[in-house]
Amino acid sequence: MHISKKAFVSTILASGLLFGAAGVYAADGISLVKAYLNSTIKFTVDGASWTPKDASGNKISPLVYNGSTYLPAKAVGEALNAEVLWNSGSNTVVISTTGGANAGIPYNDAAPSTPSASAPAANAPAASTPAASAPAASAPATQTASTPAGLITLPVNHDLNASGDKYKSVGLAFIQSYGKAVSSGSTADYDALVDKYVIDDLNDYDMGYKKRAKENFAKTVQAFVKVNEKDILTKYAAILKNTTIDGVTLDKTYSDKGATYTTLAYEVDLPGFFISSFSVFMEFELDKKTNTLYLKAVNM
Image (cartoon, rainbow, N blue to C red; front, side, top):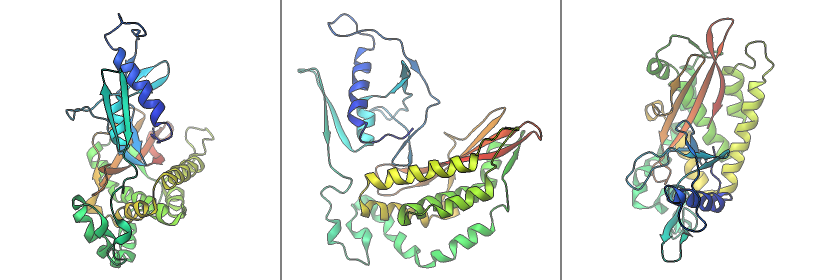
């Protein structure tokens, strides 16, 4: 699920009302409702994996009520760089946007050769990123050489951690393709990876997995580019394009294995961004004829 700023206010107000109603039903205008906690729902914010947490840092599962998903106003607000406060005197959820991610930062004053100089102190480690761009031309070749030659499969009885290690280089390739798409506007690299690794149909059904994956990816990139400023896109893309195999880890929170499916989630750190990591989700489905799991989708 992707949280957009356009839907931010309505989501905050709805979630504030729902959570305010929990356990309270005597006052006028307040009703007791029956909702469900759904810990399987995942979130992304601007294309990066996001885990909602409460004020104490504990993971929060969203509520599902009448087919809609609800989260605490404060958790969603902070994810979108907004301040959310409760005014008990006026019975109001107060939402204050703080502007763009670069509000108050003189990024236009930075020297052209050192774009990271405009970043806050917390972004200091990113200063080494531009330097790494010089040998970047050889990096894709090195990573591509270590990736499989064709369709990716898993045996039914595979070990999740071992499988995660086996296909980490593929996860890296898809992560880099997102960075390239954000910076160039072209999804060619991602499309080529899909054509190489993703199966098109399973179990005698005309699923068109490849076409669907390409269309979803293009929409995700377009939405991300639309809501972010150019300098943010440049820094974001640089981190992903220059990520190495050592910078990729298996996200064990979202990697999962069932009787007919497997999800391998890989993440890379995003120093200097309020969303701390970017994740790619490689989804496998069982082919009943061969009793083998095939890669059917790759989502960001």
